[in-house]
Image (cartoon, rainbow, N blue to C red; front, side, top):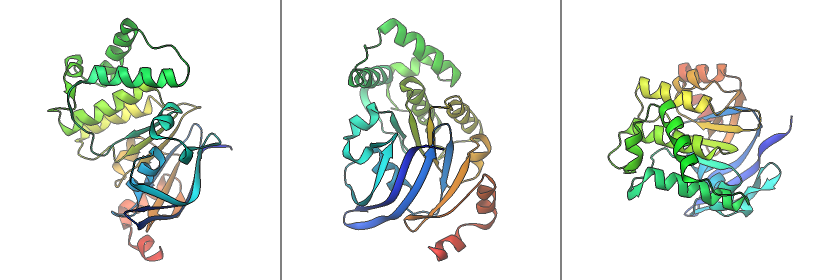
Length: 251
């Protein structure tokens, strides 16, 4: 099976401190892979390196999306190619309505791909449809992005952005962080609605409970900056029961 995302022997540093120490991972199109691991293992660092966040230096290895070198692209170019990162802690942007933010991002990506911009009526129709599915009050989209939103509302807003931008590869960095059970179900339904044969997902989480709703094809354990174990969904249940100690020691 051809990999959509292919990571080979990836090493990265932050402020000259080695964090990723040889990550190798392949995610085929149509599949959802989960990464679990202890704090400080490098899970968020991996997501930032793939999305192109500044301050993260790749010192060795490669990462490609559909055969194209991701690491050679600027963050906006990666986004236009279809990479989307859902933040663990979504930013607040006062003075920029959520609708304006999403439409600007969507049209910037369309222009980068040589496509026509989406007209306002079509955009509003799509936004209302996607917001209703995520149980987001449409009036919230007229407020500053994430300003005054609860943790659950911020995460739902991230999923709305994903639904609107329709990226090719989704990276979810601890999307379950700070969610109560009802919000977790709604967010998971939104993610599951985006599953498609031509789309891949990397779900980063500490807890197995998210994977009860977003059922992964494969589960990987990241410890001490490298993948130390891989398996099916049952691996997540094992980690929930036994913890990460034996993997941390092995790493």
